Length: 334
Image 1: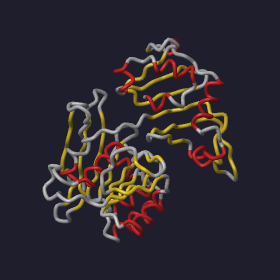
Image 2: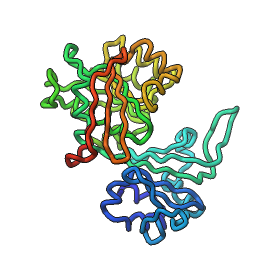
Image 3: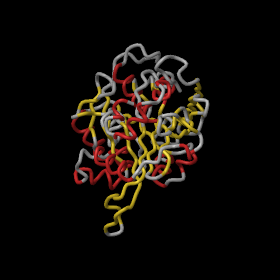
Image 4: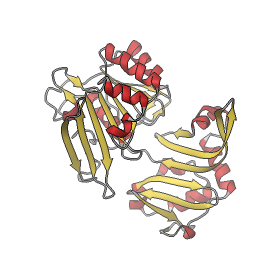
């Protein structure tokens, strides 16, 4: 939580700083809403933070952030310059150092029918990014193409807050490092290119990753996925591309170009499962064209158990993996 505390207003910082160590270590989201109770989500459960830093189930006991709290928070998030964050405000989120993403809600300003930016921001959802070394190791054999000596074209599907980004980050690290991964035929590391549009996968600061994404990995930070994939293919000749949250028509075109160039792709998409993703026209076309030879459905139970079901392009189940969260220190396997 220490990086998060640096951009919280003093009133809220003091309360969060009083949280017990085990609670602070488990926080996944911090939700700040003007005139409504300060909320944390930890271990999949929601609690409210009282003015003395204690936790309560009753929202009436929680501290209610003021307008001044919200103004100070947006000022700190934008480094005292709203203008330079106009594009982020238009998209509804700001990514801060460490890969933490802050969702925003308030009054939208329209220009020719499109959102130009958000003003009067009154709701903030601070999502805590964590690096979990080893989380991708159990899944890697199920998406490894031994004949090609590379990963399969892989799509990872899950609802928000199930660990997609954490998983692809570690898969990038494992593929880049090579060596003893427990995967047959995988010895030499691959050249990995990460197109990190939201600065969440590698959490770059001045272009340098702050998360371990492997020794043979190059990162395009803050670059739109479709354009970034083409730039990576032309300039860095990767063996595999890693991208987060695809779904736009231009993403599909770039994926097809990567396939034709012989580059494998590991991508994520929001959805409750394959059938849910298939309802979106762009994703339906990719699935119908069998662009992905491995599709991973990722979920997490309220008890913290991670579960992966791996399908091939024809809908045949290839593997099902489940393990209790944190059974091994620092590791959340699928």
